[in-house]
Image (cartoon, rainbow, N blue to C red; front, top):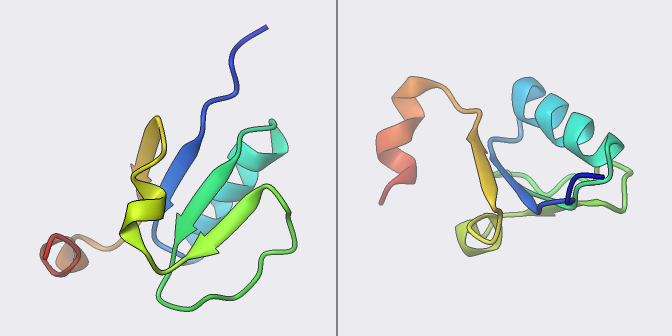
Length: 74
């Protein structure tokens, strides 16, 4: 059995939510960074506005438009 790694997802749009839900469905704990803190209805997905929460992930997905990358790096 594979280890369930904590996953970080940057981006709360449709693509980021899809990644978060897929990871949570397989049992991984997920921290999802989003500008809005809307609940996704899954206890395994922690929606946050703090990038430090997402940085806890062993695997981190960027799911934001390329134009937003510079803004997120500051």
